[in-house]
Length: 143
Image (cartoon, rainbow, N blue to C red; front, side, top):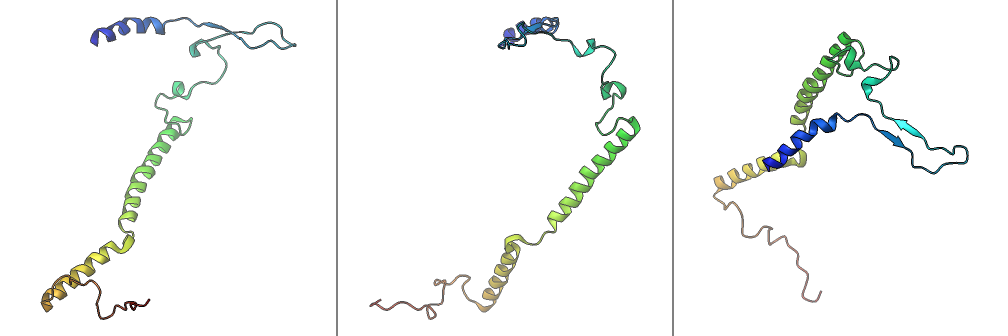
């Protein structure tokens, strides 16, 4: 496998050094234009002196907030402070102190209280009949 990768290592620099290619349009010619369109690819560095300059050329530490380097860094710091510190800390605190969803904690406390009461009274923790049999109304045999 290593031998296969070494073959690509020699070809990689050659493939990156290919000069710009020409492309010919293969679309159908309309009645207005009978000739084929020829376009050339230009590398981004070969453009003329006009046009838009990349913000990374002006400011190598560009963060994407502003074109002014000082304001860009300030906005980045404020944005990360609010995004990480405030959102995570306040958001985590909010989620931690939400009320008991589904009353799971209340059910656990109530079960522990009933177990303590039954142990004091000497009753079994769970009766063999879940419901009180005297309160169950059964249908008659005719129904």
